[in-house]
Length: 328
Image (cartoon, rainbow, N blue to C red; front, side, top):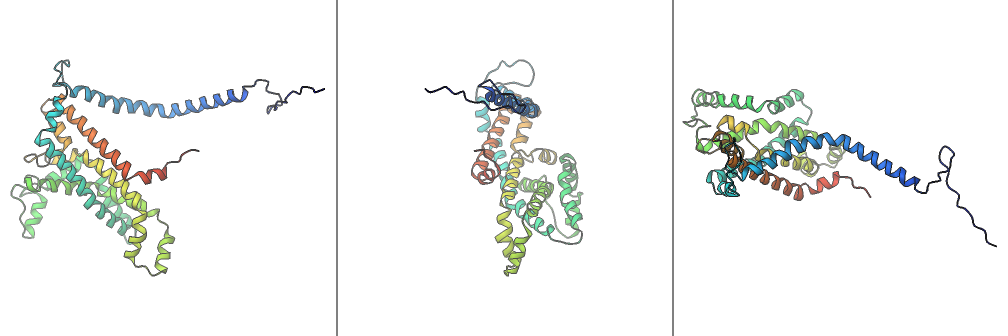
């Protein structure tokens, strides 16, 4: 005759038998709850600040942008999408967008090769290497207001240091100065921006060079590769992720260019250096058209977001996929 057998339960670490069938599941739920609380404890403050200082201002800007509002009083004059239509059909705004794109293009075409060349030079053992690195990086840590005021004085027509140096070697600068001549004002501003932010490019590229194994250079030299071949075949491919990240940061920064341009030219002369940010401040603050300026801010946010997402999707995709660890 068959007899029923009771299934033996595994004892606990303290020697007692867990008589509850759901003991393991209960412990698992407690562990998951503790993990969720830990994540909330560490990310909660950052998430709260993000919602308060990023998401909430964006939502308020969207709200203001559909009204004709001067910054005080109730929101009563609803205009819908008229502000957006006016902005997109405004020739000054389209020129400002073109100026932003010009700065983006020049940054990649000029600042990247220049920063790469300086980084390769400073990566070699030489006298005064630390001093040169400091000199290159100092402009980046300067306040944009201070740097802008200094360059504004240096570029004054006739009596500025730049014009005085040109006169000393027999050259003549623009009659209205480099910042007062519409044909050269934007390129002058870009030259100042390059002086200001080149140090960041050099710093990032130097950090990338430190991650290239020295054994690769030694092996290439043993195989008879020249210095140029080593840079083209080894250094540049391995610096690819660093250069792409810097290009992304440069693009985002160029789209948001404001401080330096506002101090140097205020968007002039004749709107030749106006960017989307200076256009927004001009209408939103200077002319008290807060609703119109909010529409410009929303458009600037959308353009920056689209460009950033597209760049990450098509350019940084391989780098980001290699940096993210996915669970099984």
